[in-house]
Length: 397
Image (cartoon, rainbow, N blue to C red; front, side, top):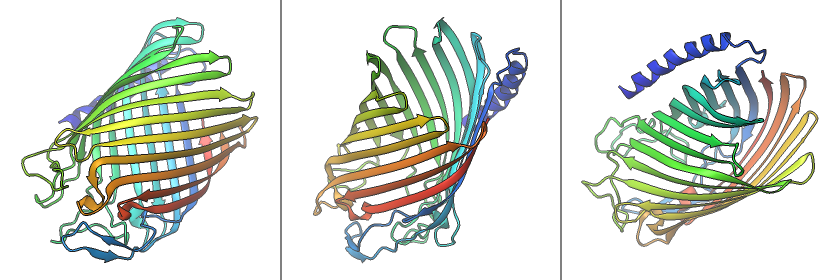
């Protein structure tokens, strides 16, 4: 019922937005399109572990030798946006986005993944001061996500010991609503947002497996401080929850408990310092602290610290974006492999990326990107390295 109502709303609003835009006498089109298509190489399509390891999750530990699968893939992204407000006090807004990775070889096809998102709503102008505006946006949205649940050691579709096909367990449909208030006319700019969503996963054919369906709620905001002419500090806070319908919670030994369901509560604080080094180069320093509380007994509590550095160069037709981030996630009560005889659960990761974008003319451009991830964990099933190298073409209007 929720999905049908959302689709109906979108089909109703988008034609209305187009009609509304047709009445606008301005020369600027309310529509914008950005399409990127590329070809790339992935060194580890299934995020397979680096080395052979012993899996302690089964009742009897099993020796595992992972097989790393590499190959070519095609990244595709499309962003279509409609802004019917322009300079008016009210207008319809909407968007459609698609992003996906499509792998060329038969032994990496299970790594295919894509995401559709469509939204339609309204934006209201509350106040303006020069180019600055205070606005409120109300935007329902709908998402379709497709991802294969595969065995990371082999790349094969996941099947249970009893033969149940679990390959669709990570695919879902999501219905949500986003409300955002932005204040730009005040001396200290700030924004407040509220989001609610219901995520419906594909259900396994056997009732022996818990459902991942859950409700999501988020409320938060951020504040911007102009410290000096080239320096800006943004500080944000989010409180959000994930309340699962049926997925059983774990006790302090890592065992799922019948008659329970998981509920996670998150508190997240972040800060970003922007420094313009000159007219062409901007530097960002980022930090995010996330604290998750497992509302049952606390087995899945964790604290995550993430540090980031971004450098952006833009001049004439060329744009370069370099990013480095490091994060660590510590679980106070959980064990690697969910096995009490093993070490405490811990993850560490270092991620680096570099993307260059060059405009050929007003609408066309070319780009190249390289990304690498090195993740370590006390749970050796999730310790891996991955490098992706891509080149592509871009069209925008």
